[in-house]
Image 1: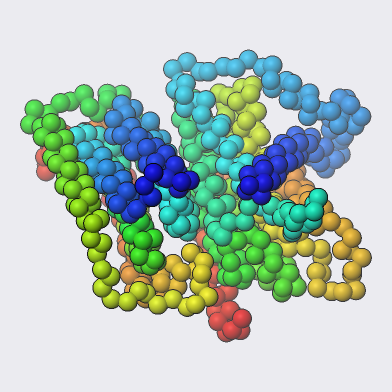
Image 2: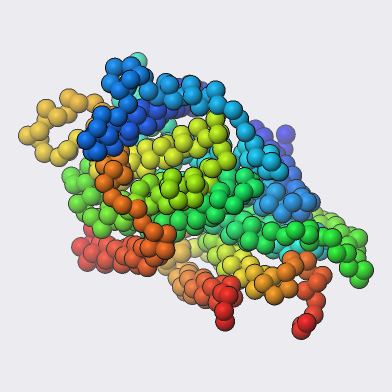
Length: 341
Length: 102
Length: 172
């Protein structure tokens, strides 16, 4: 009874609060990192070194006027941000933050659940997130959001295919769809899948940038393009939900990359006994550290690279990444058959 | 409360099938007709998987995967035909799509 | 007990959303109710122990096919609602009656057939003993015993993809 209901509920509360606080400070971190790359300081006024800036942002978004455009579909307009945010949050149900630890005398696994189709579950919630964007743009009853949402959803669907194909090659290497089993496979082999499947990592990195609508693939929502894309007509709390969803997606994508390619909660060199002192660091700290490094790479890329044009973006997804991902699967399968492992 | 037997699933599947058939026969919007066909295919899938669970054989699920494949192909081609028709005649009312030439 | 509650709730939601799909005035609402229907059908598959098929249902059906429908609905957004033209020759009442007769027949078959469950003819598909996982079972069957239908299905999808692109192009 406790194990079935109370424990997952407590874990869910922990994960949700952790994610929401991380998202708030990720927004601040993005502004700071971009500022430092551009040789300036970023937000410095609110609190020491701008640490209270997220609080100011939240207050601002709460007190903004809540508009609905004229002749917009009220229900769908309200539902769209929710449809974008909920899949991003429920993807955390299968992400393993650490192995089983002993808390208060009972073994508690540091993940909410371990589905035997965990990786496909993440793909399915990513597929559902597309709806919010299409509906957000369509229900605004206005030209720019509609175009922005059609572009954005077409981009998401195209890169979703490439990312799912890279998942297939990771599944081939690990032998299981369950996220916990994938980390276990990396521990048994003693090597992260980033070194076993570098092509898959590259394709996943590009696809993840496109899936989260981040630079260099953020044409549908770039400020100088279609006004603000599909969330032009949203303001106040509804815009906050879209914003939250985008950063939560970033965290999900980084956490999935950490689990699949960088060993999840394992310490570096998990099978080398000489580095036993690294085992003193708790597993979930390793996971968080690796996820933050990947998030920093996201921010770094945004500050550095120029934006892709839309037709270049679609050509990249369909003509280069998908064939490359399929070739990667074929090569991985062939190597697996030859090595017999 | 009686335990849930496959008969329950068959009745559910029959009801969903009938809803799909009603949609195909009564509605005039071609897109809603195509969506009702998807409901029919889903009803068939529920049936297949319920029996796969009762007989303990995974073949039903394999068949259901093929049904989903065929449904995807049919949706794509059906919507392609609809778009080609709409470009010429500017309607999605199936009663107006009754002439072979215009 | 829990399974009964889950089944009846899911069945009510599935049928409810199904009815709303075919009776909604606005086509976009129809599409949204269809998505909800598919998601609850996926939940039903999980209840039946077919987890792989549940996620495939969400990814392919709810996340692919219905997105396609949504795109087409938005591209075909008409000023004049399509139901405005009423064809005199159409007999909707007859269609409804025939559908209800179909339902009665199926329910009769299901209600009487449960007394004598059919006997299995032929052995069950052979599986390796370590394939306990639902995904492994389905994968094993798909790649050994049903390999030819699998390849034919991929050909079918290729043909459908080419066909859809050719049909939807502007110039021929």
